[in-house]
Length: 285
Ligand SMILES: Nc1ncnc2c1ncn2[C@@H]1O[C@H](COP(=O)(O)OP(=O)(O)OP(=O)(O)O)[C@@H](O)[C@H]1O
Ligand SMILES: [Mg+2]
Image 1 (tube, rainbow, N blue to C red):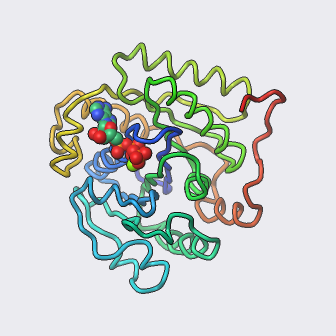
Image 2: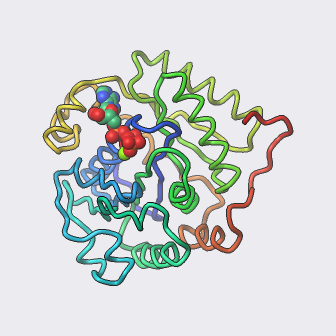
């Protein structure tokens, strides 16, 4: 990954269907970006399930819940992952975090606001589906990275996610990463299908970020609690992750979100989940 210093980029990693590889993608892209000299924070937005820390082999004492109830400060809560990646743990088995209320969102927003100068890249790993927390996190990020797999249900669910995120959280730019694709052509076909239906019915715009092959090394790395790009750096999936990561960091962030996190989240809390992207009549549900 090439180094890029400049304005903070905030990218939420999301999907329609669960289990498509979001957490692996987040952990590995974060590791690669950190290796290239970026200051990277992962926010584990899959609150209550704590996937990122498991993938990094961390056992943090504190999590977001402690930050929100004031029992720990940011320094105590931010865990250290590989290559200097910092992790804001989402808390395991903490029911109160599974649906953040407005006060909790405000506090989280205020905290992240104070970190804008400390990082070059914030990746938010979101939970499966399009629940409240996901809308909040993706709506607050400037960009969404949508992970899709070739299964038909994944494609339908991906379109549903684009629709809800664009209409209810005002997200207009989606990077699409096709995971577990047997060939590049299959990945391109999936991307084209998704683009065609999105173009017809929504204002959101998609960009192909790349594709990752199905590779058992991911599974082996998960068992070792290491990102695959560190455990098996020369494996097919690690090479593909590097290509996708380079592309992501070299791209100009989308225009129009200059206010950053604060602006977007404040707007969401002020206005509620209102449509900010108009939709053409006859949009499929
Ligand atoms: N390219 C790949 N090749 C092989 N296995 C993969 C690949 N990507 C992900 N997996 C496997 O798929 C499973 C789900 O991955 P991961 O936990 O990253 O998905 P997720 O989208 O974060 O899931 P959730 O929605 O539950 O948070 C893991 O067991 C992982 O090892
Ligand atoms: Mg996950």
